[in-house]
Length: 224
Image (cartoon, rainbow, N blue to C red; front, side, top):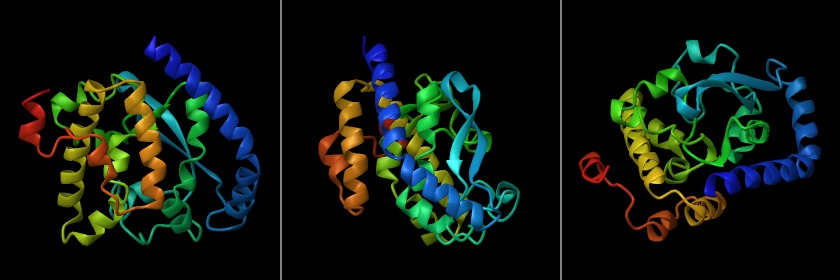
């Protein structure tokens, strides 16, 4: 029943949002077509439901060849690969809006683990890889809420790769936690928290709402 309701909810909400946001869509499409590499959308292979690849929709924010230059799949604050509008789109999360198309067609859900490129997925521990996409990936989720400013965290580190791996490890554990607590209440609160942390980025509200979030690998696998 939950999964049926979740899919119906995804279709209804994505349809309404796509209609309401169409004026913004058109403005951003025009601006992107006139700046940077004049590329509006960026379709990229991501790992999704049952570990099968799908094409994710995003507004273009970086150079087309960005995965093969610089820091690869790791994005830092003020990344030199960003196009002129890219920094604004990523900071406001507007670059994620086209993923409503993925939600509508069924590749994604509004709430779920964030879909990663294969390289990022391969960084997960085997146990996490086998579990994380037993549900559809989402536009937002517990990993996105806790690590709402991942780029800032990585940039603050002296070693980008080490910092990204540590974040990736924790994200994987958080998403396993999500599957152990999946339900209407969890999804509703994650949607609420997504908006909350955009307004109050330094808030620790998530840990107050969900008091049993994993704090370490050992703690998580003790209950996984």
